[in-house]
Length: 332
Image 1 (cartoon, rainbow, N blue to C red):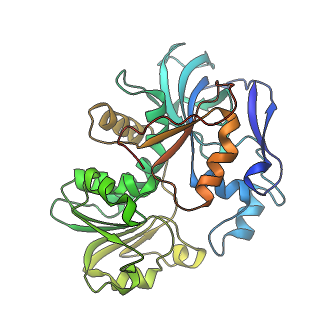
Image 2: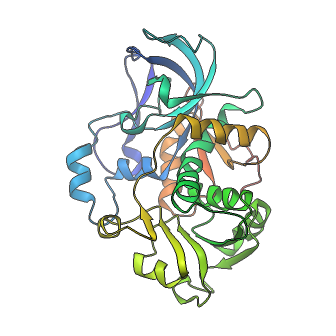
């Protein structure tokens, strides 16, 4: 099969196309033919060996010192079941599924083997590209807003870094719960964020978040440029701070009203998000760049810090050069 390989940490060009063996699904696993895969900020961090402050040494010890031990990157995918492993009875060959691979990686390839517990069935109304775009930011925002902050209608929520994968999901899911959302991003994305459910928008260049005097019930930092102390200053006395991207110190000291750390990858959350997409209640904001050949371009876009929504590639595609498909929600 064709797959992407990253042998050493480095620039986007270190991502290259290679030939790899088709994985064999083990017990409780299925082999999925990947139709679409997301390219996330997490993928870019692993490719570059670039981690939040304080995490560089433990991350490299866990993932690989000079380069990732698992050479095929990618964690989010949508496709069809190609082969069943032993003990799998609730899926059939040809079923549409979407899911995440976690630390196994491997989604930036034509095939990936994953446990059935990491998969959700794909609704007929949801395209593979939309499914691949929905799960990374969607599952992160869902976990922190619903499970950690326990958000409810009428609360005020500020989303910092509102135009990226996690940020656009947080804006939509908070608004879906009835919260009053203020979105922080560059001005060019304000119309989009209001369409997604933000009641108010702030241009971080005109009004830096650190200088705001207003208080919110929930602060959701999706980009990692807000500290624990700064977040607490911006919250109401019983407010909650969510640091979706936190350095080691803020992660270790996160307790009480401050929440940080990794979001779990849960089958039931994937199913919920896909159902919301199917019913038009959650827009994953996808931009499809092309096949595996488009991965370096996707990584360059992520490295600029100005990506809007979710970038998706189509591993079976073999043409060279990016081919942009309009986002379902009109991402800029």
